[in-house]
Image 1 (cartoon, rainbow, N blue to C red):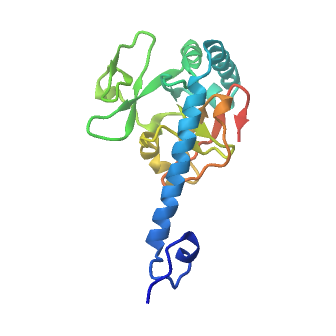
Image 2 (cartoon, rainbow, N blue to C red):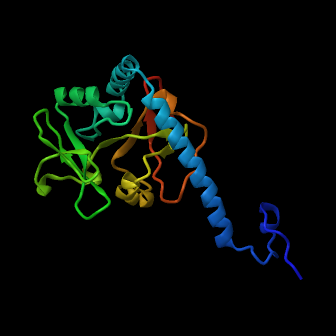
Image 3 (cartoon, helix red, strand yellow):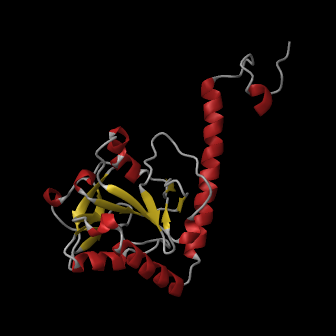
Length: 225
């Protein structure tokens, strides 16, 4: 006797010989991955298309908004990033932090590992390219800090929703570095703030078990959630 043709409808029936939790999970994951990749492609394209005047306006507005943020005002150790691929630029935030006596750090990829440390970043710091051609401060490993030693971590992102979920570039470096936060209920450090252009906001994102949600996202127009 021939079995019924495989489809979403009959696959979901427990009695179907092809039905298993692993199969269903695998098919659902493929759909989620496709959706995530499409959102990533669209939002990268949109932010790349912003003109220089808009980029400058958004970055300056972001600095003004963050300078009044309580978590920023009372932090000492702040990690941020160097803008690339149309990302909103935290350069002016960095200058403000230096002017106000805060210690600034940039992410640095540890050799032979897929997690991040954070290296001191000063106005005269020398930079070198890592294996992904991303600039990193030149310093001794003994000067590196862990995420737990940061008060505030400003993260780049490709897309976000109003619940604080983010889509990154797909490497998973921040999620692996911050995985310990999944087991913290009372004491959470650092505060995680995503930085983005307003156009990077999207509808509710599908999340995975390994995703680390942000505390909130700041754009040139508002704070989410």
